[in-house]
Image 1 (cartoon, rainbow, N blue to C red):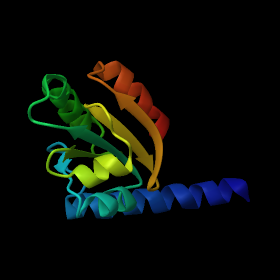
Image 2: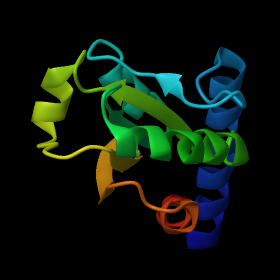
Image 3: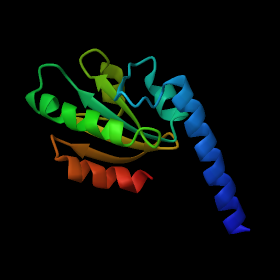
Length: 133
């Protein structure tokens, strides 16, 4: 019974991922811009999501940006990546208590499951991403 439920769950997740890919949510071109208006929908509609909280004036954010873009391409179809500018969207940053940037929040099925702060190397972030899968 458990094995059958597991197969059904995996099949449904693949179907959802394919549908979202067709809608462009988990684009192979990299992370998508997320705003206060689209944030809740983004994390709700993507089974696995990583959101980069950043600002244009932040040097560590600029260092992390290419890492996030590379990982978004690498995990396209498996994990959705979003970028949220904290200066333009302060209410979401407040809601999650973001005090330092860059901060990456990791979501599974719409629930926050992990967080990293700072310009970490790709390997450290990828380790967290693997836990989402």
